Structure formats: structure tokens, C-alpha cells
Amino acid sequence: MRLLKVLFIVALVALQYRLWFGKNSLPDYWALQSDVQRQAETNQRLEQRNQVLKADITDLRDGQVALEERARNELGLIKEHETFFRLVPIKQSTNE
Image (cartoon, rainbow, N blue to C red; front, side, top):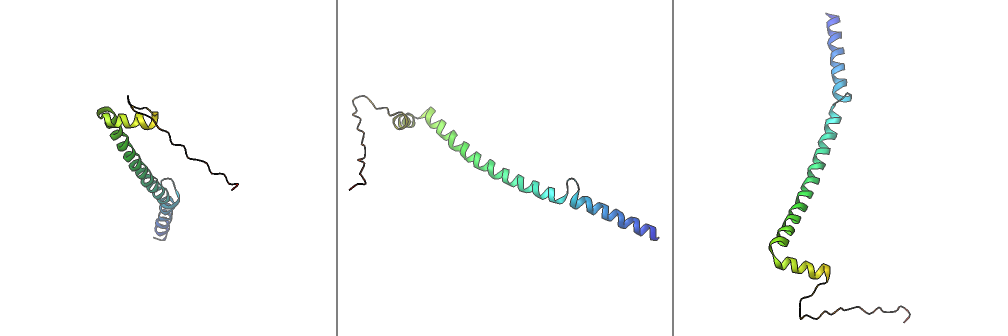
């Protein structure tokens, strides 16, 4: 009977050791849970960015206004019979 109790205690300690310190232990599980949560947040941010890019692509494919706006802002293009004015700020000297 005494030997049986000792065997049960040894088995319990061995199982507890694996639970807390072994491979796939609870700390490993908790670390993986936090990794999964971080990855889900990253995926959500990337999904939002993808939605913005998809909307931008749709605007450029379908709408002339978005295409014209991008050509004006990024490439500096102007329409026929338009005059382009460039306003350059005056640098103020610090010697005054």
C-alpha cells in the first residue's frame, strides 16, 4: 500500500513537471497565444491597408477624376490651355 502511494506521488510529480516545464507546457501555450493575438492584430492592420489600396485601384480603373488628380499632383501635368504657376516661398535671412 505504501509503495502504491509513492508510485502515485512520483507519477503526479512527473506529470506536473511536464505540464509546467516540458515540451508544449503551459508557458509555451501562453506564449503562443500572445503570438497569435499579435499576428491577428497585424493581419487586421494589413487588411485595412489592403482595403484602402483596393479602393484606390478601383478609383484609378473606373474614375477619370482620380486619374486626373493623381497625374496633376504626382506628375505635375496640366491640361491644354491652362497656365501653370509655381509659388516659391521667399527664404528669410537670419542676419537681420
